[in-house]
Length: 310
Image (tube, rainbow, N blue to C red; front, side, top):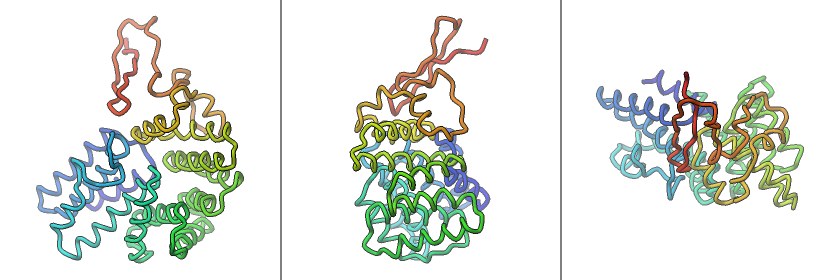
């Protein structure tokens, strides 16, 4: 169970693809935990699965855990004090990430109130990385009342970056941009996220840069940044986040993937011409295909035509 927890935690922390396959694997480990009476372990995989579901599927409250995989309040109430304390820490670490992604200031503040009571250390480096990452980003985003929280998180990643940690560098630069926003700061953070191939952080940094540019009345560049963030979220598998962006910014429905990609030329990823349209409308021509099949996106409620192998 411990090995599986480390694997899936690292998977999510690295920003690898979300989707039904990941959720099904998490559910298999959950069932294994319950079968062998390891309920406290199984709950951790439920939390991760609900986290992934909230990013991918439509929800009225995406920053809350009250879904099919994990019901936070009900689960915590059934635990003893010690187990509840540790589970609340892990649950809140996931929720503060969701709050930052969905821009839920109230939830960010609430999660900071909870997480700031825990030590700034952990036997699990990966778990600590994730918790301090989104505590720091959220603290600067909401201008948290206890400034020491953000500074402690920033200092943690600053020290790791100086020590040569490739995982810490994009987080450190992103926090600096959130603390003291500027074009140079955000562009340095975005370049670092791309260099580290942390697609989820790249999407968040681009979105925050776009919001900053709107505040500076640079609307055209801001919209280009938001377009690029939109495609990054979509490629990560955070389809509900991408959908919410398209509803908030109608211009995204006609956004060009290739144009958005060209805005940040440091990207090492290659994309095909079939990706030049928005996710809702992207399709392959059927004129040269003998047989076609469809991939249906239940979040966007759209289908994509794909050419069958001959």
